[in-house]
Amino acid sequence: MMLKSLSLNIDCITYDLEDSVTLTKKPEARTNICQFLNRDRPSNIKETAVRINSIESGLAEEDLNSVLKAPDLDALVIPKVNSASDLQFVTDVLRRQLPERHPTSPGPESQTSPIKLLALIESAKALTDLSSICKASPYLSGLIFAAEDFALDLSLTRTPSLTEFLFARSSIVTAARAHNLPSTIDLVCTSYKGDDGLKVLEEECIGGKGLGFNGKQCIHPNQVDVAQRAFAPGDAEVEWAVRIVIADEKADQHGRGAWTLDGKMIDAPVVGKAKGTLRKVEACGINLIALMEKWKGQEPE
Image (cartoon, rainbow, N blue to C red; front, side, top):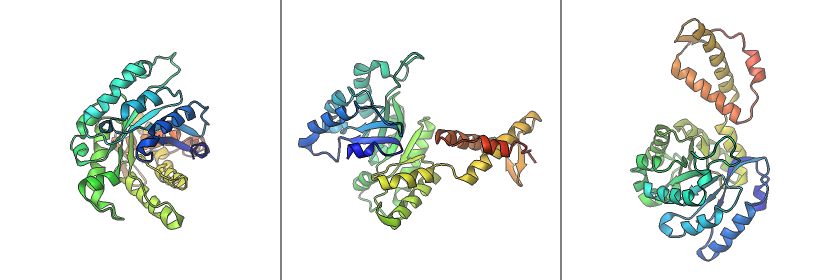
């Protein structure tokens, strides 16, 4: 299974030490993952992560002592983060064991990037303490919504509309943005078989993107392409953004802070969103040269 994962074209792949591994198999899993992360990573995988056991389980330190030895580790996924102290525990271990991978340590000559932490939000307690959690560690790079555990904690029944999670999802995205965390990863789609399953996934991705999430947890390789297409900017969105950015440069030269395009008012927030879209396009590896050339004559109306 781990070898098969190397064929995926994916932003981040996470190897699990928590729920998918029984207690008696934890030591073996640690060894296997550490050995696996010693091999060369293919270029189609941008980041590798490991989900450790929760701090409250008492197993997290053993996990960290093992996986932090692996050279090909970019991020740690921390489950059941209920308070800032959970992330502070991991932060203390990282500072002791890998001081060279602290966010403030690497210089231009460094060959290693800082370790990232991704916090799984799974409970009512976590949701009410999001502000403290977001400020708990300089390593923190994002929040992930764990819907199934959240539903268990609140005795909720998951429905196709996902309205029972609306408050939680909106709170997570808002907190992440308020604290400048780059990653907000939406809930798992439990449907993945057949066309109907992928249609459900696409609908969930579109809904999550509309709420402000910028990624989706995938539990099966079949889900990857659908999620990537849904979260990547669409053709019409990219073209509109290019036209706005080009026209805004010309408007700015004439001191126009607000102007129109195709009868729609364009001002600073709209321009900011357009520039953000183009940054996302570049991160997706999409070439904008032809589109910029096509619309180089775009003028503000």
